[in-house]
Length: 59
Image 1: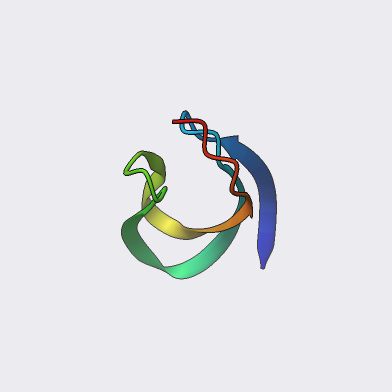
Image 2: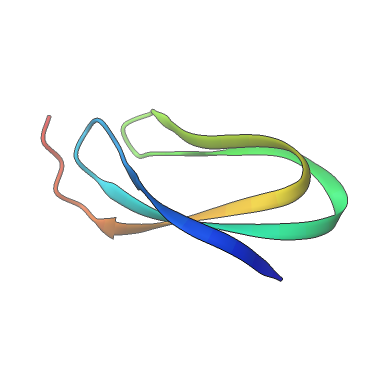
């Protein structure tokens, strides 16, 4: 079940579409940009999936 999504603009210039999904079990994880910056981290009955939508790195 998809709950919501949003766009994350990384400090390196890449843009990520982040989708939140509800789970029936607890999950503890994170999504990290290719530059090393954490996009999102979680600890609960949710999971986030990050999809790169713009690879215009500014560094």
